[in-house]
Length: 173
Image 1: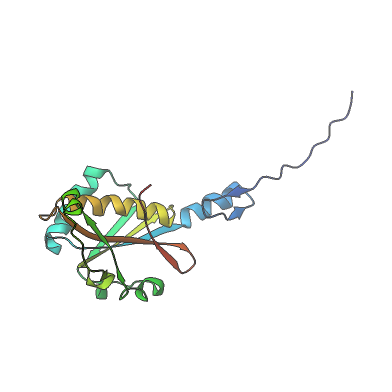
Image 2: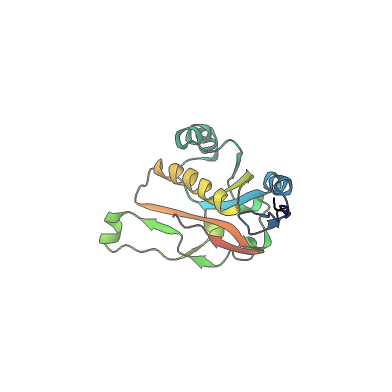
């Protein structure tokens, strides 16, 4: 009978960020430590108190994950924003979504800077990527905007860090 050779298994674990871990324990530990973050800037008709009160119902309605932490601020000066976002706050952008009626009637709006939007919401999601946190934040903000009195115009932008220091808008997939 031939003698069998045993070769050590060279298994590696790669997480969503592309980081390689030499064993499953390291991978799981890293996964537990990773925290996805995202930032939403938006306008809404409701007051901060009304939005804060409605947030638990919104979370229940859209079934947000347990580990998702949301913080709502009335203006961006109260928020400790990363430098990459803070530097671009005054650049005008088209953060507007128009209803079908307004698009067909040819309405358009002047670009506004993020700093002109009334609310900022931050999302922290343990064990998730920044993009996943942005996806969950998009659902929450989308639901808030559905309850807006003015259903024709939505001003909103969601940003997350894709690469070190590079903040990009989240786009629904």
